[in-house]
Image 1 (cartoon, helix red, strand yellow):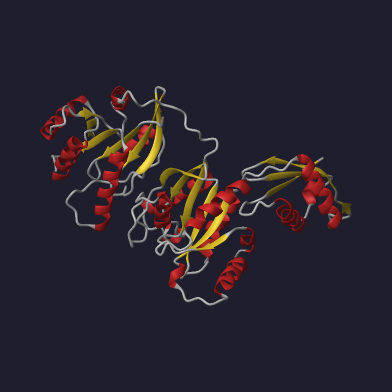
Image 2 (tube, one colour):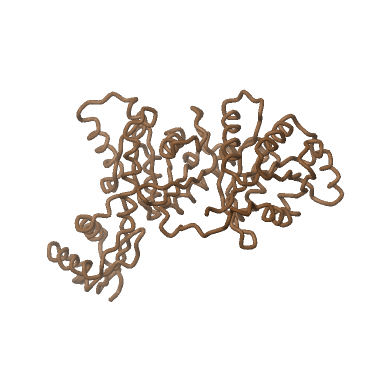
Length: 438
């Protein structure tokens, strides 16, 4: 069975993200004194004394707000509650009870799920009496903690473990075969909409306001027997346009997501074309050794003729020649145009990314490639490739053992890469070649 799930709810700025980060043992949710920074629900994992749990950090819950994002945050909190086995309602022990606290307390009672009332910001024994006010919510005795310092957090986790439903057992997820898929790109290109389309649920908040997604959102699903972990990331901006620390941390996290993924879907806005910033994102994905699928969204918004696709493709390859080795899709998430194709191609790229070539095949390839176009002489040195092997997959890395590895020209490296693609595929995957001394 799957690991039990714990959801942290509460109004804005009570410390949910700080507690979440302490639970999972790393900075996953953005922590800021600015109210309402966490908008989507963020998933993480933790292990407490051998008990593995999934943890959900939700956006601040404002029950009576008319703001479009705050309404969406409310919806996310409600979804998280449905997913969870245990609920934590977090309140600020240093403040008065608010109408939001009361509505959430009522929401907890109606959920009929195990819950704990957690009073945060209690840094010492002297301030524990501040939490007694929250008995009024009817949720029993508040469990006092300080998420910042970690005070009583271990005791809270012990209590959570005691409350785990007996029917839930911990098993190790089969993650060796898990394909990690990231959705990246500039703000407001439709990343969250694509993720929602793939998952067929409102997993990420979608509005017309650029930069709505500020954290990375993980979801797991099966596609043709393969387990995918799909991540919707905050939009990347050029450094000069990063106006606050929240966007800075979002950019840092997006870069980290690229490092952790196997395949990245790089999304573009059809009306804006393939610009320098899009090229930089694609180059980052390739430089980090990740599979890549280039997806042009909002294809419905531009006028087209029989040559539009070719012109668009040529313009991309003119700006970044390497893109000729990566799939290019034209979709409209809004009109559900070819969105189904994204996962089909992503699965194919993941297979190419993890492809293994036997040593005998590699050496047969070397014989054919060097016979067709022998290595050049450089500085009076006649270069020879003695033999080779694939030393790594995901991404594929080939080691070619030579007499003078340090002088092999870049042009011959590119020739070998193109020949490897022609012989074995690797479409959508970067190929790394290492010349080594025999």
